[in-house]
Image 1 (tube, rainbow, N blue to C red):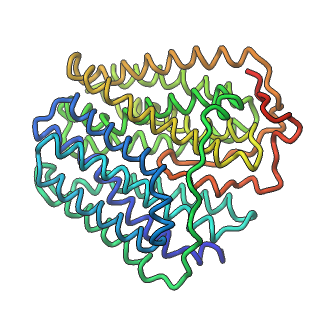
Image 2 (image 1 turned 90 degrees about the vertical axis):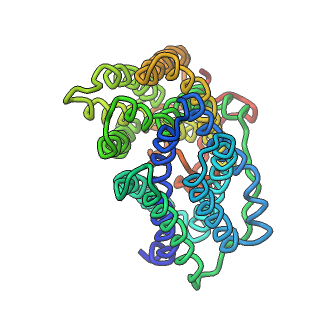
Length: 422
């Protein structure tokens, strides 16, 4: 509780920021559709956002080191507010590409400030609980943001203005805090080759997570809107998938502590394929939202399970680099998928989105199954306890490694070897 009290202002800023951010993630594709953008261009704009997020992971730590956490937070929040107001006023697709890229960089930077600050305030004993509270606030605020878009019509300015207000207010708790800002953050470390050596399953699981979840965030609202669903129905559609992921993340994590996590990843991929088919077939049916809930339950935990699979076979000094690689692979997948799936929706209709995700999940489940036929260097009993993780974070979150410095999952494995041996 002492640690939570110390970061109350930071968590309040996080909640306000993500209320506005959750609103804009659904508002922007819907507004783009009203502006007459085809699905292909909406997909391109979403890819620009996720590409900005990747660039932010690499560039923002230098900015924080130059000007400090509080100033960086205020500057990036101001950029976010300006960008969403400009997006409301402009309907040129070229401007949207630039503004969405800018938003991606700013969002990643804001996450970086928040997470590095949380890291500085936590102790090895409190890291797991801090991470759990942070993840809960992230999911709750993003879900609440879906319903707040209904304060006004999508083609009006009220929802955009409210989202901008929340983002602006997020500056206040951080700006008025009397707590000392933490030391400058370190440059982002990543190691795709190291991740692939340590765990083929985590590598491809993270990529699948980005492809499927990124497609949902980019084009899910467009799918619902193209089916003739009203503004409130689109809200329920998006919220059902988020709720499915939030509700089932802990049960899936509990199960992954007791079974080989590679098998859990395969099960989620197969479930993602089947639930994608169910979403496509149930359009207009009474059980449609239940199918969407199941889809979220299957695909939203892919990132957290991939991260846990990688953590099982990484040492403490490798965890930041490997965790960052999982995050960047997820983000790169989210850049790639909308480029192709937006075009597919334009050519074959809205339901093509979920037929395509079904194919992706089926293909990756076959790839993941191939890895399970090779022995793993650790047993189920030696796996690290599961911790919930949101996919949209900055690399600084991996400093909150809840395992503590005493954990060294690969201490007995020679350097340069492949402990998972897939």
